Length: 80
Image (cartoon, rainbow, N blue to C red; front, side, top):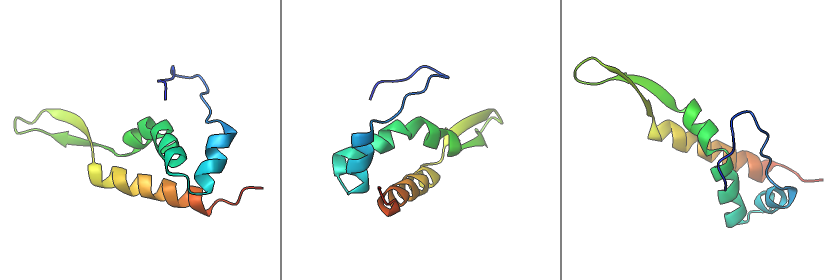
């Protein structure tokens, strides 16, 4: 997917969402890719390096948990 500008509304097409709800792997990957920046932001933690400098890093364990929860939520969703 294309990187969107900050503040713009870049929505997933309805067809992709419907396909993901029904378990299509490619559509689910598109959903995960769409929300990747948001998930990274939620999974970012503050850490200090060996010199005491503050840095922000994405916690891979927390990122996988959030991705898994997104997948489960999409699959539980009932399309009308």
